[in-house]
Image (cartoon, rainbow over all chains, first blue to last red; front, top):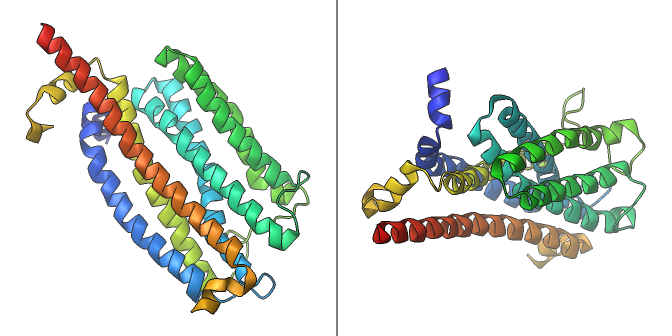
Length: 250
Length: 54
């Protein structure tokens, strides 16, 4: 097990296998999303209160979920990099940030568009979940700005990992905001204690999109990390040998 | 057909959200590929230049 783990974490090995793993995630991810989007738009029954506007859920919830998961990956990978000085972990953390920021943007934008017809407003400053999600976006921006501001990669890795770990507090706030404070957002629905409080016809396309988005995210982060590894290892012998090798052997 | 696309009057909101999602996924797929190509090219140029000068 440990041998396998070490081998996986070795940069040249990771660089070689990442495209295959990426494809293995991408294809079922696209299939799930194709089903989720189609069923979400046309097959799922209309919500008795929200009409067809509720269909925004099929984008909003997966992206909001990923905005938090990407942050946790970034923070945990940063933490692993800090404690065990694992180079690949820092590359993963650095790659998670822009992806997480994009999904946070998507969650905020679709939430805003959904809020207009349902709550009568594009934005509500007093809503704890909206505010903490916006702060999440700022944490991503801050993380990327901090990395960009430090030329020394090792120093950038350490400083940004600390910032990422501090921001975990905000992720917890986003998650529990609907339970702790009164919010325009509804409480826990899929993970409700009594089981999902949702019609199966509505629920399955949502689960498909959540898993599909997650697989797509996995595929993207693998390839982003691969490029990050290549950049970090640009002065090493294996990169030189790979570049100078004949076309078919790269 | 048109009726289901109209989404009971919420079509503009619903389709904008799905369109945004498609855009974000396509942009990210494209950015990942573009970044890999750029980084690879830069390293290739540098290493080949070093080889030639050696």
